Length: 341
Image 1 (cartoon, helix red, strand yellow):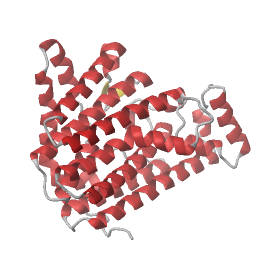
Image 2 (image 1 turned 90 degrees about the horizontal axis):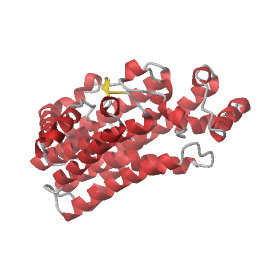
Image 3 (image 1 turned 90 degrees about the vertical axis):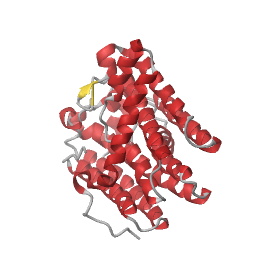
């Protein structure tokens, strides 16, 4: 059964208007973290903290809090913490991917070199952990620490499985659960824990966040194959170049077109890369993209079912609209007209 919310809040990020002021407080909390450091570090951290992302994870924290009893000061700090973890992971990703642009700005590795970028990513991650010690109880902090470990483990597993033609699709899903979905899950379950909700509801929201995080990673995988750097505001095509096996690549290796399937599988086995421009012109490519999008859409639909367990409020509606917005992003990506906001 789908939730009957369709167009009222979906366009132009209207679903985030409910938490506009709180999101600004999260940004201010992040910016304030640089002040904890010595002057020779502070300037670099201040620049990192100025990054303007989509604030998806903080948005999930705040909307979940609003839908389960109201936003507390702890939720603001927690939202900032999660965004800092995400930002730190992006700094490291950009080093690994040799990416020069992120959010329409030069990446830290492009500005200061790989060595300093890695150290700054580590510093931001450590500061996020410091912030975490100021909120929640021991159970909350243990869950947050395990989520951070999952994030790091997922990145390591992905890096050790490049060009691995023997990797299964279930292993792919476990990797993206860890490296991406774990922060979505923590955003929703952590917000509920800070609210003092019962364990059963915490786990329901954890599952919803996991489903949305997996869906979002599938979208990002599709974007990497279809997008244009200037539109996306970041360097694309790095997954293919590095040999990351993403869901569209799995579907290409399983294509009914035996020539395409063999070409892609051989490219993986020989670590030779793909002729992406040519593949984009094939029917097999479009089928692979559609199948990938369908898998993501099914997870969004399953995620929406959790919302029936929450009271009917504008915050619940905004959470529903967040999932529908992701539906639109996926569908437009598959149709070749990308929505990037």
